[in-house]
Length: 513
Image 1: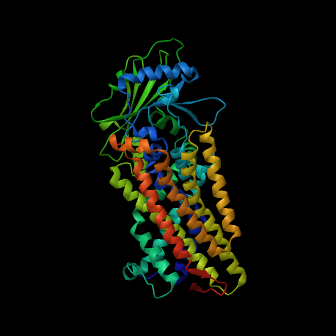
Image 2: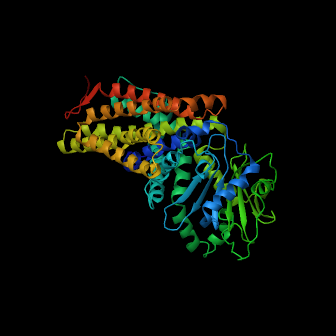
Image 3: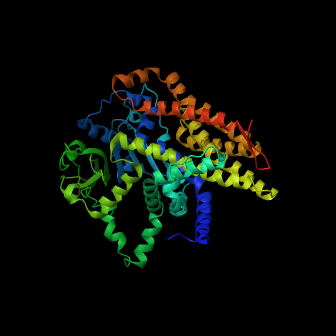
């Protein structure tokens, strides 16, 4: 039975406004999210010394742990020892410190491993991950993205309802002869329908992660009679109930504790999380990676003094709560299928960027074709905002890569990266506002192309020795970044050339020039 036209009109308005409100933010989240899929490779790109073979073996872990605690004794209450990985950082330690924002960190080289080599302590991958999750807005950023994810889901559902009556007829149509707007609409619908299952996953998991604090508080009060935190605390914060005894006692060495994993051949340990190190009540949480499963993050909790197993979230012992939450994380980031799944997610992410940008452009073109000057001006304002917010973010992220490489030796690189990103993004938005609409878009695209092309050039110029070392040690994850930058630069350049062939005037005509 056909849906009444009045209902279709309601769904179309919901789709339009949900998309307009959420689209630009989602573009930024998706663009940063594609890069976050390769966060280990980004770290290797920023820190060229990681391309050389690591000399740290498990038997050396305790030596570095002792050196860390000698330099940072205030971290004994709680700290994380992040183990070296194939493309990730070297051995490093993280801890919380009163009066300082976020986790503090120190790498193996900063503890004195190789003092003659330059130390790069930037947090490029971490910042891009924060842009993806919260637009790097402290405090309310993640909740804001959770709300945006709900609007994202609404736009997806209403979009499929609108398109469903014509799905079999128009699915593969890409009509070039019926005007620019019709061609963009066909592309928008095609990308949206093909990638719908994945976008539903992204919207669902994004809303859960972003609104988890609010949802937990609501469910804890309304449904679970204040028992939810108690029921799930041991799953997600397994050492939250540990109390210091006050009796000093030396724990087992780190490499001995790692041997307590249920099957050391099956699991790849990622980090050790210590609580009350040196106390007789000390515990350690070991998080490991297990291939060929949706929920690949496993953990065990041990008594740090004698190695007694206190909690086991591996294999058949994994709880439903832990398996579901880790599974959601893997679904969102594509961590469950190796490089092939990550590449698929990257393509879907770029498709999502097109979906959000084209949705805004369709509304803008409709406004520009209206004969009322006020409505045309609304279209121009939205076009400038869309170009500045989305393309400006692309330019700012590319500039951030270049800045991070050039200023790697700066002692305040980590704090400067955030300031530089927002300054570059703000400058791009201001540029979009003051420039004419069509010229501003093409100029921003040219800017994106040039800045992105500098990423592999800077790497080649500054890190020739490490480039060769990466091939010798087969640690070539950084090449994904350089090759992707070359591809992105070419795409931006092509889009810029295409954008210069069109001008939109106030009579509503789109003409080649």
